[in-house]
Image 1 (cartoon, rainbow, N blue to C red):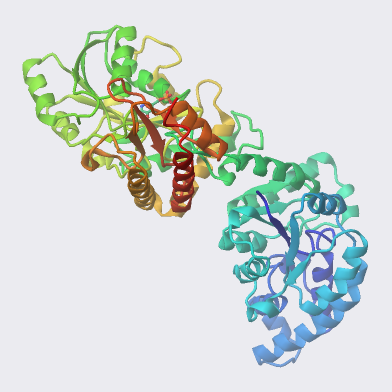
Image 2: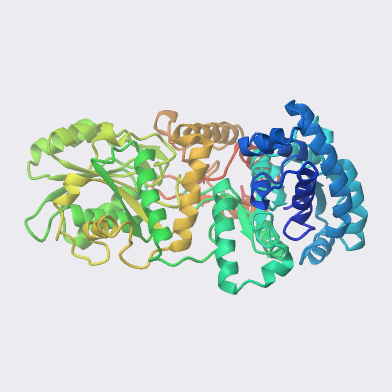
Length: 628
Ligand SMILES: *Cc1c(COP(=O)(O)O)cnc(C)c1O
């Protein structure tokens, strides 16, 4: 639950358009006969004011103008002189611009009613804040704590120091329960550096930089264009959400508090970050150039995630769940209209089985090897089948069998490739969470989807395909919408255009999810987190009497199957008890052994696993789940 909102002052809660610092800077420099353009000042607003002056003097034009006036050539002395003048000017102007921005009084009342703490950090000094506070309080906004850089040894934005100091004083230790609201890029950076939810407000912001009267004089089209520009800047800086007015924060807090309700310990859809969910709050058109560019960027980034050479490989996005992606590959890759091919499928769980079912529906000739649900796909057996059946042209297998959590070895893929067999890997639940090197695998088609280890939301699958192989598949598909070749042509020939309506919100969320994968440190870092989660889960559950289904050597870091601790274990009661405590787990998916599954992918960290284990321990203590 959101515990606190930490606001910036000018341009955010008071002083529409952040006029005061601008006027004061202009006045301060004018006192030395140096006229300053507003735009020059606005570049760095939000910084500590002295550092801001230092930055302005770093501009050769300003420094030259300064020395040309015969003022001191000692830079520090110059900064001190202007800063002293700035303080005089701002004192005069502060009280005149201390009006709360529209929506702020209502927001403050809402936060008070919700018991959410209000505090501030600022580029102003303690003395200026002392001047402002009583005026803001009269209008209904009274933060309990105001942190200035005097409390952080002069360290201001974009450093997180002031925000962290505020959190420390307010005893807030979970940054995901803290929102920072500001109106400059430096505010966003401060928030991101502290790991809190960073939100930017557009109207009345420094970034737009207009007084309320100037803003209201604009046409809706002009306002929209200015907002769009500012929104782009904030989003590029990493804002978790961008709101039009302060009043928009209220519904956002309601949404956040609902989102944090239950933790999904499932193999996807999974728990996503707030910033990924936030990307779905804006509607987008599909034939817009920005949207197509975003699609192209996703296609490129996925190649990089999979270490696939962009000359040799191409990404195709396909609407629907992961199975739609698999089915589109099978029916496009294996010719069964013009000439025929034969597909060999290695099966050791429900997803391998599903490929056989698809082949049945598509009337594709196929052979299947069923290794059993707790045995890995064996390369020797696969190669032997190839010798016995020279008619085999294609091969398909699952990387991580989500049915059990078993991780198959992919080393047979390059061997098959060398033998001229077209290879297909369902890496749905592993791609992005387990390192995969497509260039080294020489795989022809690798399939995954938006809602697994990249940590996006459901809505589309993606295929990384070898261009040369793909080129030969024109006309193979028996379905219009699942024709992978035609889908590819559309992306290639029309600069990122999806063929039919695409899940726009999901695509935006996915783009953010890719960004967050990079921020985490890429696939290697994510793999390590998942492995750590899984090891904690496995050890902890074992100590509570739950044995894993698979030996450690076969276990993926994605999802773990646990055997029922006793024959009369009531899984549904266990499930409901965990759900009451905020955890959603998964039933088992295999026939032979009674088991259930716990996933550890998504926005899931060591602390979540220990909370889960505590919950399991308390449920087992009460033992309502052991006897029916
Ligand atoms: C999730 C998953 C799929 C696709 O399932 P959908 O329900 O269609 O998204 C396919 N294969 C594996 C291994 C999976 O984990």
